[in-house]
Every structure is written in C-alpha cells, then in structure tokens.
Image (tube, rainbow, N blue to C red; front, side, top):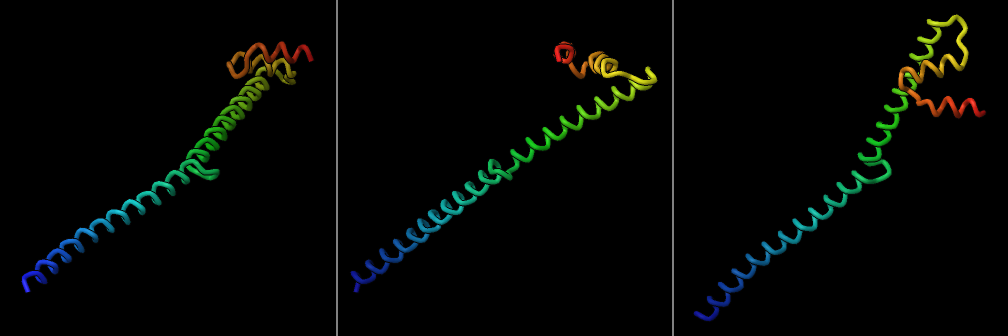
Length: 108
C-alpha cells in the first residue's frame, strides 16, 4: 500500500511540472507570434515605417510647392508681367533653389 501512495505522489508531482512546462511553451509560442505580427506591421509594404516615409515625402513636396507659389506671388507683386528669369531670381533669393539651376536653365 505504501508503494502505491509513493507512486501516486510522484505521478501527481510530475503532472504539476508538466502543466507548467506546457504553459511555458504555449506562452513562448504566443510571444513569438505576437513578435512576428508586430515586425510585419512595422516593416511591411503598408507598415508604419513606410507610411511615415510617405507622409514625410508628401510634407516635403507640399512645403516646396507652397514656397514656390509664394515666390511666384511675390515676383508678381514686384513686376507687372514677370518673366521666368524674374521668378527664378526670386526663388534663388529666397534660397529655394540654387544658382546651379539657373545656369542649367541658361544652357537649355
């Protein structure tokens, strides 16, 4: 009878350790799945990083567009019928474009 109680006690103790080990494995698997989903959300084609890059490019484009529009309006306020050279000079004065653009335009 004592041997049966010892065996029963050993079986009960090993079952407790087995449940803990299974819970640990399940937890690790769930964490790996969550890590994979998080990484794909960050770096995918439609991920957070690519969306931030697109937003940055759109902001830079809008900024340039607004600066050019303001330079054109300012040139129109100075000259009644501004030429492209007047507009380019205004863009250079406002540091929107460099002198190399003007020399490129003159070569054309």
